Length: 331
Image (cartoon, rainbow, N blue to C red):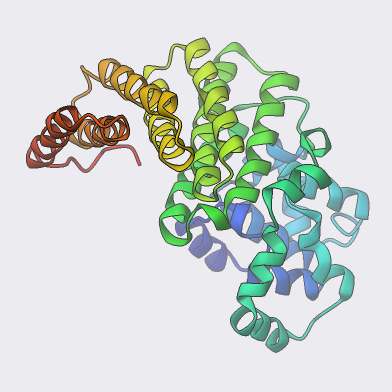
């Protein structure tokens, strides 16, 4: 790949979580052009050769040799699996390489005509993922540095963005894989105290995000477990922002479960959670955040049949909307 193409990819970064079954990467694997494949993977999240080398345990010069197509580098299957495991790539993504499918027109037909089936086969279900892989089967680095944290933080942003486009049901499995990988980094890897604080924060953010995806996929037990993990991490790190976000999501789920299963206790739980989130956010200047929390309170009051509480909360939500929304609000 020429420098111009690499720069073009780098200026429009895509996190590799959704890159694994993309047409450019599949074509590179099918044509056994592993240098191009590595460049696509590296530049998708905007990593330099040095940063990517730190991520996979290589030197910058080793990454450069691979991208230049040197045959005694990534063409060693052991080194290929080093990269696959280090970046969290599902090994199913190597199928074009193993089958030697080099007909790009056929790949394009699969991408356009049969995309729905391919996505379902690639994503599978949460239950299938847990049974087949499980957290213990996910590779993690021995040492975590700021590059890994940046990689994970980028994944949270991209998951939220993709959720707005395709919905959580299509993303929940990959999100769960990423969460378990990040959680194992926090539990098992070595890192500095500063990196550990950042890692704890991003794992909590991932738990909230993936919990939301599971909620959208109607995997309520998975969502509740992830929310509970996020709340514990928020308490441990003293991150009020994370605590607000997770209690807002938990309140919505509790109100939903109260309505779906006829559990009045869950409805009262929704009221308590939304009230606590509002209390923690009292000094936050964001109208968006306060509007969102007020709507969560309104839903919670509706779940317990409190019409007056609902009217007070929904009126407050409209007041926050009328204040105007800032451009720098978190996603």
